[in-house]
Image 1 (cartoon, helix red, strand yellow):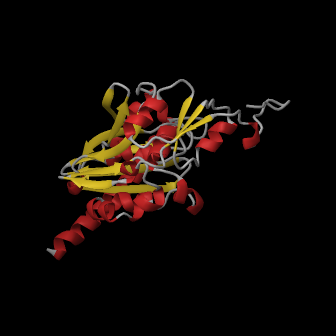
Image 2: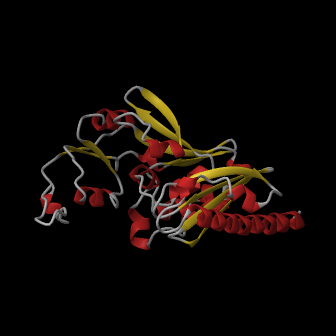
Image 3: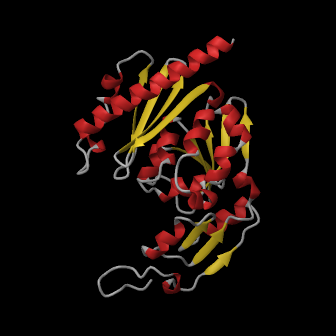
Length: 276
């Protein structure tokens, strides 16, 4: 990667050193190729080019384009399984997602612009680990399970574990599984972005709030229906604060957004009861 005289990386693909291209036909072949030093997984590539400009080393580019299982969306009992290669545009419109967890389809359909939505994938959004990307906030609220294939076999991580980079080298995110999706209400509020986005999942009496911002990783708290939203948000850690907004302000804002989303939940579930 070529560094300019003023210290910035030259923003051109012409400065990327030569690399080899691998086109695996199976997930096992992909992980074998991806576990080599300097290997990089590629699918939508909307974020990957930015990483190249930032100096990402790439000796082998492992294309995931020929692995259709990464683009599958299935319902397994009450769980919703979404392939890591599903693009934002397709996931938000998928019939299984809309039927099982309509709030996720709605929230997913509002992120990014159309150009990005057509190329960027669920897995790329999560594995990039950029605080301004929003799928990690939704995944945290939904207690989503991240299904990975590693050189040693399958492994599962929670959404918060992504920020600890807990996966082994060469691990490939294959899917995201939302447990009890059929019985979950989900809402997403990004009206205060970039200062804060909030996702809420309601399962029975259990409420999980996850909040994130463009400047910091997501954090979550769990409460119960009927509890004071402000009291629940007050348990968010000091780490949610930064130079753009201190922790007390962020907690206040989280309480307001939680109350707003729970109001939407009450209205929607009330309408459903009336239909019955």
